[in-house]
Amino acid sequence: QKEVEQNSGPLSVPEGAIASLNCTYSDRGSQSFFWYRQYSGKSPELIMSIYSNGDKEDGRFTAQLNKASQYVSLLIRDSQPSDSATYLCAVINTGGFKTIFGAGTRLFVKA
Amino acid sequence: GAVVSQHPSWVICKSGTSVKIECRSLDFQATTMFWYRQFPKQSLMLMATSNEGSKATYEQGVEKDKFLINHASLTLSTLTVTSAHPEDSSFYICSASGGQGATNEKLFFGSGTQLSVL
Image (tube, rainbow over the protein chains, first blue to last red):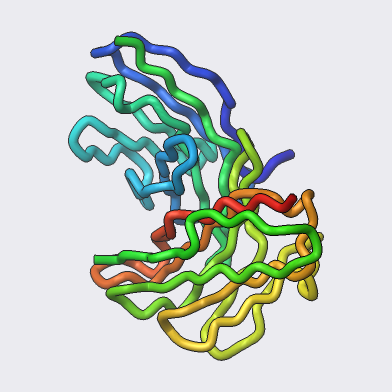
């Protein structure tokens, strides 16, 4: 079992729709969760961080965390073509600085 | 704040040569820096973790004698790919934690180095 799992996609949504990206993790003791966006040929950039169960909203982005289910998600409202990228779910493992990345979900937003 | 500079952006070298990649935190002191490698359409794979003034911790399967990491100061870490071969061609990315105003857990990435070994 991979430590952080994501559906590789591609996920295709029309412009203006809600894109829903999902992630599960295996380390039950993890406390810190992140979503990064990576454009092709570029390095990742941090979008959201979440540490507590529930929802966290920042502009068009909402991160959701359910530690009991070991599940993290990212919702992108009013999706734009510029949102087309690979979204990486990242989890910090128990007891350390090590950040474990999922394989990423490719998102295409069609104009 | 929390800017990480990585150089060079791309490098082409002949097989058997060594290549050094620099990673600098420009506006904060990075207590820990991480080196990742990413092959096309694959995720980031952590190669090693470096802490200022101590030896780097390498992930399983990463040859420490081939990928030399030096973290001599709180703002600079270097990765040297020694005797590079075509299979070492990849996108190498550094990241740092410890940015001002952020927790030590958030990672700030350099722009990456595309290495092509002929």
